[in-house]
Length: 219
Image (cartoon, rainbow, N blue to C red; front, side, top):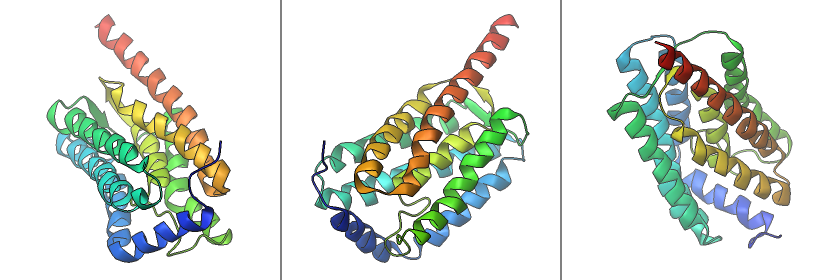
């Protein structure tokens, strides 16, 4: 199945988008580092800050990338935008209203994989893109573009030390499948990591959720 737009059109969308939102790319990186800082705080307010920033990422991308820019070349962007906005609301509800999830900085197998996803999304992803000719302003940037942000989200969620809902993971998983399909068709090789993050991150998150649910039941 082919896409309704060419690679050049896709890259041009990112060029226009990146230039129109500059310097928000820097702001989103700073927010990403802020999340990493608060992962080791183990406070209720820290959990809310982490989830608040993640929610903001997904809301921003839904509105300003999908609905405002990507929709110019692909009408499916309206559906994608709705998905991202919905995920932002799910994160907001689970993290700030119901407090279904909390975090700590540990180094179990979940956190190790989570760290790999985070490093990939913030550092390795843009480097691969740069060497493949997708440097700024044509780059899908961390925090402002769907794929690296979804990878980052999987990474952060694997640092959870309390999980009382599994609904956070479904839309990132759906996007990992959609994004991988587009990556293969457009030959955006840095996005191939999205599929690995989507499948591995989802399975590990659900495994952690089940373990915690069983532990709660035993109590």
